[in-house]
Structure formats: C-alpha cells, structure tokens
Length: 100
Image (cartoon, rainbow, N blue to C red; front, side, top):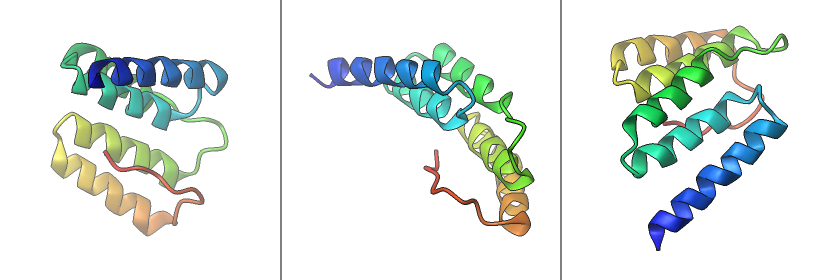
C-alpha cells in the first residue's frame, strides 16, 4: 500500500543522502515522507539537519532557499517568506528546487 511506498521512498532518500550528504533537499524530502507517516519528530530532525548544511560552494541565494524550506516546514512562515525574498533578491538558483 501507500505506507510501503512511503517507506521505500524513505530508504531511497537515505541512499541518496549517503551518496550526496551535502544535498539538503534530500533531507527535506525524506522529512516530508516521514511526516506523511506521522513521524513528526524524525521529520523535524531531517529538516533541522538540512538547515545545518551549507557546502563551501553554496551561494547566499541557495542558503536562503534552504532556510526558507526549513522555516516553512517548521511553521515559521514569516521567517520563511523573508528568506525566500532574500533568495530571490540575491540571484535565481541554477537548479530547480521543490518547495515544501
């Protein structure tokens, strides 16, 4: 059923994180799947882990975008909006990103 698909997705994102541990979007997406399963604590841990990531090559816009995703997930919508505004005013990200 859908629960087994969610669990499979969580495992797949775990594999992706092991291969690319600096990609914050994998943590965020795994957190969304955990949240869908009702595991709020683990989901929040994933998003907080993503918020601590910033690779040496990250631009200010990319960092602001990740922080916007994290804050939106945590329900801090005003902070998320401020981060998104900072992201947009700085530069357009080079890759498409999925919004939380």
